Image (cartoon, rainbow, N blue to C red):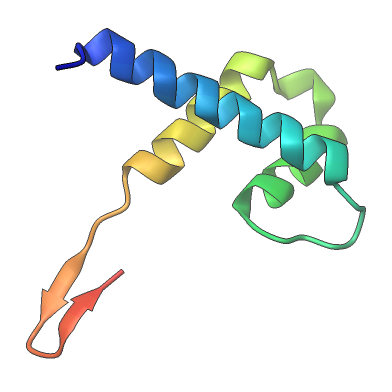
Length: 76
């Protein structure tokens, strides 16, 4: 079984790979998802953003997804 730190390390590595992939394929004016939107704001406000900040925002965004249930099933 993996430890918490191993899981966190894996998640950070995956998040960083997604950031890099999105940065290499980013096209101004063509926002595909949350990461592209974040890159847009990051580029417009460089003085406020760091690599660690980007990583933490994306980890927080994706880890806080909640599923709400209704009689018809889950709503994401």
